[in-house]
Length: 279
Image (cartoon, rainbow, N blue to C red; front, top):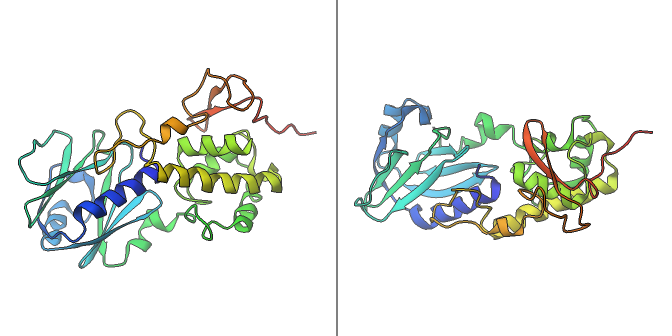
């Protein structure tokens, strides 16, 4: 699944490829991809719109158009492909085609068909239901340590699923939660309200650092995911625990374990990330 660093890399790529282009026509091949309005209206309203900018909030892409905001969530395997002309082959996994006035095309592909597009009035993306629930972006000063600490102390839920729900801080997915918790030496099943202030401070900084480094590397390529420019991210070579089960911990040499936490495959070092034992 594309996570925040991958989506940010897609955003940058899209701005290089389609910013300033005028939409001449739109073809929707799988209507359920369009959340709202109806696919026919979606197609009609986009004709003549110019892509002024592509922004991001959490894992959502926001296309800033002349009169609308178009919100896109890639979900599991959604991706964009840009064609300089219309001669390239269209695959069966292509579900939305945007053709521009200069003859170039932007294609949305999605093997599982889980991704979604929503067309909203100009500057209304901030009120979109999924975006309204998001926590702060994982950068300073948006991601405030004091606020983060106070919110953690209100929850007895395990730290990993709490970080995954996007309300404390947005953009963390399975890969980067495992990496941040390893760096902070926190067991993924630790109740949030049992973390010490020192652990919270370390975790806060590790979340910022891990995601910043992943953005710089263009994200993590797992299996088939590539960004809008057709390039694979390189952060996978820097992963410390994710996908490393059975290999030695780089910090202590203990074998990395993989377990299920909240139905998600979870990687950790049982020596460095010991569970808190209540006295």
